[in-house]
Length: 102
Image 1 (cartoon, rainbow, N blue to C red):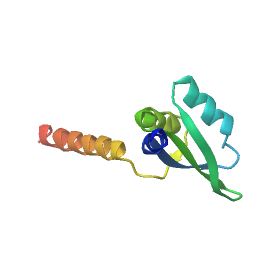
Image 2 (cartoon, rainbow, N blue to C red):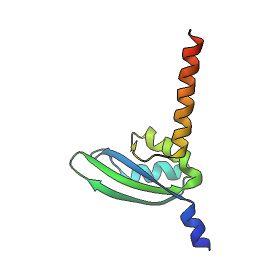
Image 3 (spheres, rainbow, N blue to C red):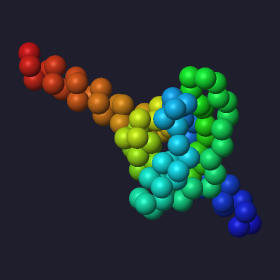
Image 4 (cartoon, rainbow, N blue to C red):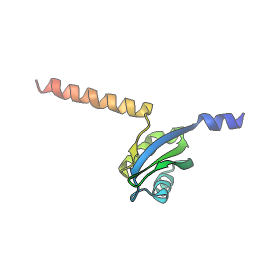
């Protein structure tokens, strides 16, 4: 029963970064310093140009994890509900600006 709860609370984030700039230690240190619980990090694919990886974190830490990864210039490839919400807010804000400027 406890194991089921652990699986439900994990979320996988697919990321991409230049091979020369990719760093496991940068990811781990940045997230752990900010209190994010990391379950695993694994490489999905790599080539001369880029490394694609999966970071598994606790669901409650998703928003801060996405923000921290983007601040460190990791491209987030996976879609998340939190991103949809912020994108919708941005769209509404643009619409409001357009309306106010008429």
